[in-house]
Length: 296
Ligand code: GUN
Image 1 (tube, rainbow, N blue to C red):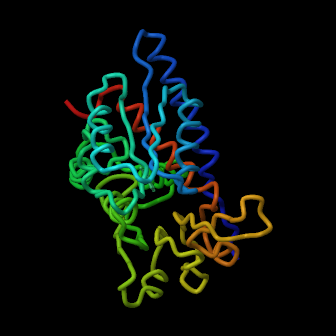
Image 2 (cartoon, protein in one colour; image 1 turned 30 degrees about the vertical axis):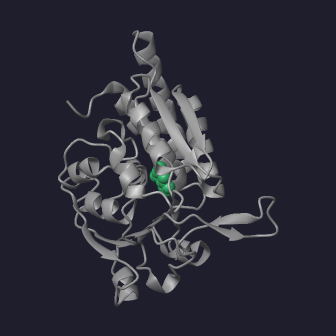
């Protein structure tokens, strides 16, 4: 049995936060504007509350200004769109996000497309998605960018490797598949995207050098699916009820860590893997938004 190494997203994200903080100090001491991230949070979903709280905390850590705009879940689509228009036109705000998911009576796609793509630090606007897919400068959505950054910092070889992506969401599966297939490092992978209708998924995984598990299905990936020496990246963060925890739940990944890890060369933990990398990627995007370097 090989000994596996942890892809430590917490550690790497702390390093990147320090790098961003230095950059912010430089900008401000040269008389520049402190980058400002705004977040819109609708309702009181536990996961969303947690994510937004750690985004705000990360802003403080790197020296960004931040604002949190809250609505109850009965907010109308018109109210939400009007707030987005205000943020689009507010020169103080460099970038902003609308935390998803939104209540069912609100058209999520309409909200996403209302955000000025130059302030769309989530990278969800079709202009950013399209630019990413043809390799142009853009805001790349945070989770796939965080994964790529984690692979880069650990110098994981990707060229010519078979990467199996489990899941085809707009936020993770589709963009990570495109990024890893792109020319250059980390990329040049041969990518297979698997989903709920895939036939022979287990065999596909068995031939994978890199598995990106982004299904949201707790402990879906088991040891019989792993090629010895594979790199496994776990994007899952399902809240599973756990009466032994103070919170009443534990975060559970898409990978059955205890049995899969011994087969891997590298693997991400949950929590402490992709999660912190996602947050810090949003900070990287906000820094770029403040510097106005992506779009002319
Ligand atoms: N919900 C789940 N992931 C994300 C994300 O990256 N950004 C936003 N805004 N909402 C999310």
